Amino acid sequence: MKKLLSLASVSLVLLLSACLVPEKFSAKIDVQPDASYTFSYSGTVINALAAAQIKKAGALSEKDQASLAKEVGAFSKNADVKRAAYKGDGRYELEIESKKKPSESLRMLDIFTVSTDKSGVMTLASAEINDKTKRELGELGIKIGGTLEVSLPKNAEILSHNATSSPKFFGLFGTYSWKIGSADQRPMMKIKFKS
Image (cartoon, rainbow, N blue to C red; front, side, top):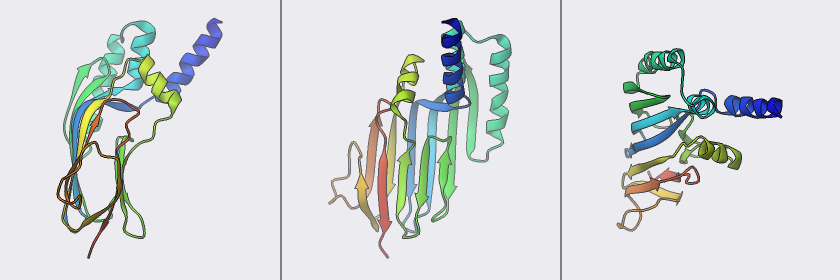
Protein backbone atom coordinates (compact mmCIF):
# COMPACT_ATOMS: atom_id res chain seq x y z
CA MET A 1 0.00 0.00 0.00
CA LYS A 2 2.87 2.40 0.87
CA LYS A 3 4.41 1.68 -2.53
CA LEU A 4 1.10 2.52 -4.27
CA LEU A 5 0.77 5.82 -2.35
CA SER A 6 4.39 6.63 -3.16
CA LEU A 7 3.76 5.99 -6.89
CA ALA A 8 0.63 8.17 -6.81
CA SER A 9 2.64 10.88 -5.10
CA VAL A 10 5.40 10.65 -7.72
CA SER A 11 2.89 10.82 -10.60
CA LEU A 12 1.33 13.93 -9.05
CA VAL A 13 4.76 15.52 -8.67
CA LEU A 14 5.70 14.67 -12.27
CA LEU A 15 2.38 16.02 -13.53
CA LEU A 16 2.76 19.33 -11.71
CA SER A 17 6.55 19.71 -11.64
CA ALA A 18 7.89 23.11 -12.62
CA CYS A 19 4.30 24.22 -13.13
CA LEU A 20 3.59 27.74 -11.95
CA VAL A 21 -0.06 28.30 -11.13
CA PRO A 22 -1.53 31.81 -10.79
CA GLU A 23 -3.12 32.58 -7.43
CA LYS A 24 -4.11 36.18 -6.75
CA PHE A 25 -3.60 38.32 -9.82
CA SER A 26 -4.68 41.08 -12.15
CA ALA A 27 -3.95 40.63 -15.86
CA LYS A 28 -4.62 43.01 -18.76
CA ILE A 29 -4.35 42.94 -22.53
CA ASP A 30 -4.48 46.24 -24.39
CA VAL A 31 -5.01 45.63 -28.13
CA GLN A 32 -4.21 48.39 -30.64
CA PRO A 33 -5.94 49.03 -34.02
CA ASP A 34 -2.99 47.45 -35.89
CA ALA A 35 -3.43 44.24 -33.80
CA SER A 36 -0.28 44.85 -31.75
CA TYR A 37 -0.90 44.42 -28.02
CA THR A 38 0.53 44.73 -24.54
CA PHE A 39 0.04 42.01 -21.93
CA SER A 40 0.55 42.72 -18.24
CA TYR A 41 0.31 40.47 -15.17
CA SER A 42 0.65 41.48 -11.55
CA GLY A 43 0.20 38.99 -8.75
CA THR A 44 1.37 35.76 -7.19
CA VAL A 45 2.11 32.37 -8.69
CA ILE A 46 2.87 29.17 -6.80
CA ASN A 47 5.15 26.33 -7.79
CA ALA A 48 2.88 23.26 -7.77
CA LEU A 49 5.83 20.94 -7.04
CA ALA A 50 6.59 22.93 -3.89
CA ALA A 51 2.90 22.81 -2.89
CA ALA A 52 2.96 19.01 -3.32
CA GLN A 53 6.07 18.77 -1.12
CA ILE A 54 4.46 20.93 1.58
CA LYS A 55 1.34 18.72 1.48
CA LYS A 56 3.48 15.59 1.82
CA ALA A 57 6.06 16.76 4.39
CA GLY A 58 4.31 19.68 6.08
CA ALA A 59 7.00 22.16 5.04
CA LEU A 60 9.83 22.76 2.60
CA SER A 61 13.41 22.16 3.70
CA GLU A 62 15.80 25.10 3.93
CA LYS A 63 17.60 23.68 0.89
CA ASP A 64 14.35 23.60 -1.12
CA GLN A 65 13.50 27.15 -0.02
CA ALA A 66 16.96 28.37 -1.08
CA SER A 67 16.68 26.58 -4.43
CA LEU A 68 13.26 28.13 -5.12
CA ALA A 69 14.55 31.57 -4.09
CA LYS A 70 17.36 31.24 -6.67
CA GLU A 71 14.71 30.91 -9.42
CA VAL A 72 14.13 34.66 -9.12
CA GLY A 73 17.38 35.02 -11.08
CA ALA A 74 15.96 32.92 -13.91
CA PHE A 75 12.80 35.04 -13.99
CA SER A 76 14.89 38.19 -14.10
CA LYS A 77 16.65 37.01 -17.28
CA ASN A 78 13.32 37.32 -19.11
CA ALA A 79 12.98 40.88 -20.46
CA ASP A 80 9.19 40.75 -19.93
CA VAL A 81 9.56 40.19 -16.18
CA LYS A 82 9.67 43.64 -14.60
CA ARG A 83 9.80 42.41 -11.00
CA ALA A 84 10.13 39.02 -9.33
CA ALA A 85 10.30 38.25 -5.62
CA TYR A 86 10.27 34.97 -3.73
CA LYS A 87 7.74 35.08 -0.88
CA GLY A 88 8.50 31.62 0.58
CA ASP A 89 6.74 28.24 0.44
CA GLY A 90 7.04 28.04 -3.37
CA ARG A 91 5.24 31.34 -3.93
CA TYR A 92 6.48 34.19 -6.12
CA GLU A 93 5.24 37.70 -6.69
CA LEU A 94 5.56 38.67 -10.35
CA GLU A 95 5.05 41.73 -12.49
CA ILE A 96 5.16 41.01 -16.20
CA GLU A 97 4.74 43.33 -19.16
CA SER A 98 5.09 42.07 -22.70
CA LYS A 99 4.71 44.20 -25.84
CA LYS A 100 3.93 42.23 -28.97
CA LYS A 101 3.77 43.13 -32.67
CA PRO A 102 0.75 42.25 -34.84
CA SER A 103 0.44 38.43 -35.24
CA GLU A 104 3.21 37.84 -32.66
CA SER A 105 2.29 35.02 -30.28
CA LEU A 106 2.38 35.12 -26.50
CA ARG A 107 2.74 32.22 -24.09
CA MET A 108 2.73 33.40 -20.49
CA LEU A 109 4.06 30.74 -18.07
CA ASP A 110 2.06 28.02 -19.89
CA ILE A 111 -1.02 29.67 -18.37
CA PHE A 112 -2.25 32.08 -21.03
CA THR A 113 -1.76 32.37 -24.79
CA VAL A 114 -2.43 34.82 -27.60
CA SER A 115 -2.13 33.59 -31.18
CA THR A 116 -3.21 34.69 -34.67
CA ASP A 117 -4.12 32.18 -37.38
CA LYS A 118 -3.55 32.50 -41.14
CA SER A 119 -6.98 34.09 -41.65
CA GLY A 120 -6.09 36.89 -39.20
CA VAL A 121 -8.25 35.68 -36.29
CA MET A 122 -6.62 36.49 -32.94
CA THR A 123 -7.38 34.00 -30.15
CA LEU A 124 -6.84 34.85 -26.49
CA ALA A 125 -7.20 31.87 -24.17
CA SER A 126 -6.14 30.42 -20.86
CA ALA A 127 -4.72 26.91 -20.78
CA GLU A 128 -7.23 24.09 -20.58
CA ILE A 129 -7.01 22.17 -17.31
CA ASN A 130 -8.38 18.64 -17.21
CA ASP A 131 -10.58 17.37 -14.36
CA LYS A 132 -7.78 15.31 -12.80
CA THR A 133 -5.46 18.32 -12.57
CA LYS A 134 -8.28 20.48 -11.16
CA ARG A 135 -8.81 17.87 -8.42
CA GLU A 136 -5.09 17.74 -7.70
CA LEU A 137 -4.85 21.54 -7.46
CA GLY A 138 -7.74 21.43 -4.97
CA GLU A 139 -6.03 18.69 -2.96
CA LEU A 140 -2.90 20.86 -2.79
CA GLY A 141 -4.93 23.80 -1.51
CA ILE A 142 -4.10 25.96 -4.55
CA LYS A 143 -6.84 28.54 -5.11
CA ILE A 144 -7.00 30.65 -8.25
CA GLY A 145 -8.49 34.12 -7.95
CA GLY A 146 -8.02 37.09 -10.22
CA THR A 147 -9.20 39.29 -13.02
CA LEU A 148 -8.44 39.57 -16.71
CA GLU A 149 -9.31 42.67 -18.72
CA VAL A 150 -9.07 42.96 -22.50
CA SER A 151 -9.35 46.42 -24.06
CA LEU A 152 -10.20 46.47 -27.76
CA PRO A 153 -10.08 49.18 -30.43
CA LYS A 154 -13.07 50.22 -32.57
CA ASN A 155 -11.93 48.14 -35.55
CA ALA A 156 -12.02 44.86 -33.58
CA GLU A 157 -14.83 42.48 -34.49
CA ILE A 158 -15.66 40.04 -31.70
CA LEU A 159 -16.29 36.57 -33.12
CA SER A 160 -16.82 34.91 -29.72
CA HIS A 161 -16.07 35.40 -26.04
CA ASN A 162 -17.08 34.15 -22.60
CA ALA A 163 -16.34 37.34 -20.64
CA THR A 164 -17.99 37.94 -17.28
CA SER A 165 -18.80 41.48 -18.41
CA SER A 166 -18.62 43.29 -21.75
CA PRO A 167 -18.90 46.90 -22.92
CA LYS A 168 -22.29 48.45 -23.49
CA PHE A 169 -21.28 50.25 -26.72
CA PHE A 170 -23.05 47.80 -29.06
CA GLY A 171 -20.50 45.18 -28.00
CA LEU A 172 -18.05 46.31 -30.68
CA PHE A 173 -15.18 47.78 -28.68
CA GLY A 174 -14.16 48.68 -25.16
CA THR A 175 -13.12 46.55 -22.21
CA TYR A 176 -14.14 42.93 -21.65
CA SER A 177 -13.44 41.43 -18.25
CA TRP A 178 -13.35 38.06 -16.56
CA LYS A 179 -13.57 37.48 -12.83
CA ILE A 180 -11.74 34.21 -12.27
CA GLY A 181 -12.39 32.31 -9.05
CA SER A 182 -11.49 28.73 -9.94
CA ALA A 183 -9.62 26.52 -12.41
CA ASP A 184 -13.00 25.82 -14.08
CA GLN A 185 -13.17 29.33 -15.46
CA ARG A 186 -11.30 29.51 -18.74
CA PRO A 187 -11.24 32.94 -20.41
CA MET A 188 -11.47 32.80 -24.18
CA MET A 189 -11.97 35.35 -26.96
CA LYS A 190 -11.70 35.37 -30.75
CA ILE A 191 -11.22 38.67 -32.61
CA LYS A 192 -10.90 39.75 -36.21
CA PHE A 193 -9.80 43.22 -37.29
CA LYS A 194 -11.67 45.27 -39.87
CA SER A 195 -9.57 47.07 -42.46
